[in-house]
Image 1 (cartoon, rainbow, N blue to C red):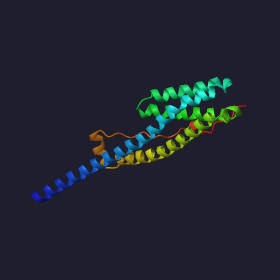
Image 2: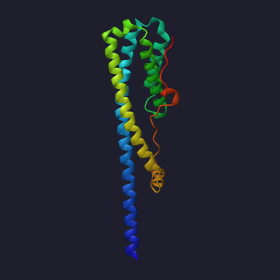
Image 3: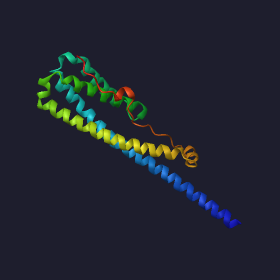
Image 4: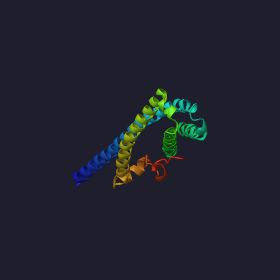
Length: 182
């Protein structure tokens, strides 16, 4: 009888350790995926001032648009590492950049400059990298969140302080295609 109790205790400890290690592994993978996004977001933050400066001389009647981009960048940079504040700020910056590129179509002289073309290409490339990294992060976060919700791991997760991950998902208004203003 003592052997059965001992074997059951060892099995329970083994299962608990394995579940804990799985949760840690999933959390680390998700944090690493966020780090990949963060690198691209920082790259975009570095490119935005150059883009605004390149556009400023040509888009004199679009002062509000340029200010929106600058303000959105400032909010994104200031949002820090708190994902619940950072994700909406980054989405706002993406929307402001999309609006700037849309409005730049009304300024063929601006679009003809090599500097603007290069910056637009770099930002577009960065946005594509962000989109890919965001997909990977969201998949990691979904797996992590699912593992936290499954019994009996949910009991272990609650006892050990694991918390749900925030998804980097666009809201409906942010998914909308910017409309040209005539």
